[in-house]
Amino acid sequence: MEETLSEPLDVPSHVPADRVVDFDIANDPALKHDVFKRLADIRDHAPKVAYTPHNGGHWLVFDREYLQQILMDGETFSSTHLGGMIPLGIDPPEHAPWRHLLLNHFGPAHVRALEPFVRSRAEELIGKLDGAKSCDFLKAVAEPMPVSVFMEIMGLPLSRFDEFRGLAVLALTPPEDGEDMNERMAVHGKIMGVLGELIADRKREPKDDLVSKLLADKIQGREITDQEMMSICYLQFLAGLDTVTNAMTYGIRHLAKNPSLQEEVARDRSLIPAMVERLLRLYTFVNTQRVVMRDVELDGVTIKKGEMVWCMLWAGSNEPGGETEGPRHMAFGGGHHMCLGMHLARLELRVMYETWFEHIGRFSLAPDDRPAMRGGSVMNITRLLLNLEPLKILA
Amino acid sequence: MARITYIEFSGVAHVVDVAAGLSVMEGAVKNNVPGIDAECGGAMACGTCHVYVDREWLEKTGPKSADEDQMIGFAVNIEDNSRLACQIKVTDALDGLVVRTPERQHD
Image 1 (cartoon, each protein chain N blue to C red):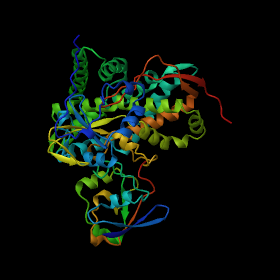
Image 2 (cartoon, rainbow over the protein chains, first blue to last red):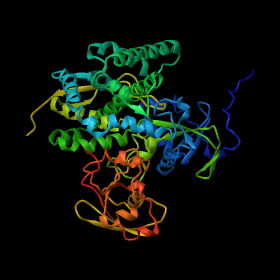
Image 3 (spheres, rainbow over the protein chains, first blue to last red):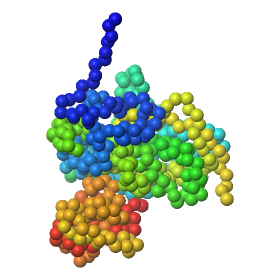
C-alpha cells in the first residue's frame, strides 16, 4: 500500500531551525476559540523573533523593544506593501505632510466636538436594549456605532445608514473559506462608488464635513487630487469601523466575564477611562505588517530584503513583568503610523461604556454554539451573545 | 551623560542620569519616571511626551522643528516653554537640565 505524505512547508536556508514556529496566524484553529489565549501560548514558547512558513512565510516579532524599533524605522521596515494608501501605506519622509494634514481633523479638540453626536447614537442603540433579556452585542451596538460615526465625520447622511451599514458589514466581515472573492471586490467597488459620489458632491457644494474640509486643504501647497481623496476616505473606512467594533466587543466580553469589575464600574463611572486603556491593552487585536527594504539583523538573526514582518502588538502590550496599566500599550501601534484615530476610538469607547452602564444591569456571556474569533492581521470577534439583567439602583 | 531632573506636576522630583544620544523622553521611560506617556515611542505621532522646559534651559535645548510645533498643538495645556521630550536629544551640554511634566498628557 502506498502512503502519500504531504510536503513540509518550505523554510528559507537563512532562517535558523530554532526560530521556526509552526503557526498559521490566519487559520490556526485555536485562535478561533480565544485568540489571546492562543497568542499567549505561542508567545510563551516562541523566540522573540520567530519565523513561520505559513501564509507564504513571514517573521513574527513578540518583543516590545523590537516592535518599537520596527515601527520607528520606516526606512528599513516599510509600509509600501499597502499600495500607497494615504497615509498608512506611505513611508517617511513623504508620510509626514499627509499625517499632519489629517491630524488637523483628528486631534483631541476636533474629536471632542463629536462627543454629543457619539453620545446620542450610543443612547439610541443601547437604549433599545432596555428590558431586553439577551442580545448580540456586536450587532446591537459595536457594529452600528462606528458606522454612524464614520458617516457623520464624512458627511454621509444618516438616512443612508442601513444601506451603508450593509455594505460595510459585507466588506469588512472576514472572508469565509471558499467565499466568492469577486463578490467581495464588487462590494468594495460599491463603497468606493458611494465615496466617489460624496467627493464629487462636496466639490460642487462644500458642507461642514471632513470631505469638504480636505477638499479646501492643501498638501505641500497644492490641492489634493481626486485619487488621493479617494485613498484617504477609503482608508478611513477600512481603519475606523471594524477596529472600533472589535475593541468594544472584546471589552464588553471581558466585563461580561468579570461581574466584580462590572459592579465596580457601575458604582463609579470615573473608572471608565483607565478601564478603556486596560482593555485595549489586554485585547490588542491588530497585528500590523511591514516589508523589509534591506537585509537587517534583529535579535541575532538576519531578516532578508523583501521578507514580511508581522508585529505581534498584543505581545508588545502584554509583556510578562511589563506595565499592566496606562496608555502605553500597543493597541494603536506605534511610531509614525500610530493610529490617527486613537482619540476618536477612545471617545467612542468611553461614551459607549458610560452609556452602557446607564442602561444595563448585570450581564454575562450567553452560551454560543460556535467559536466567534478569527486570526489574521485584524483578529476579529464576530459575535458576542449576552444575557442581560435590568438595571437596579445600586445602594 | 547628563543629569536630568524631571519634576512631576505634584512637585515630586526624579533625578536620573541619561546617556548622551538618548532623548529626554527615553531618559524618562527607561527610568520609570512617571508623567510621560510617549505612546508612539518617539515618532512625533502622539504628542504625549509633553514637558515644560525650565526657562533657563530653553536656549540649550534649542528651537522646535515645524513638525514638532504642529504636533505639540495637540497636547494639553501648552505654554511657550512646552516641548515634546522625544525631540530633545540629550548631550553633555544638557547636564543639569530641569523639565516639568504636565498635569496630564491626555484629555
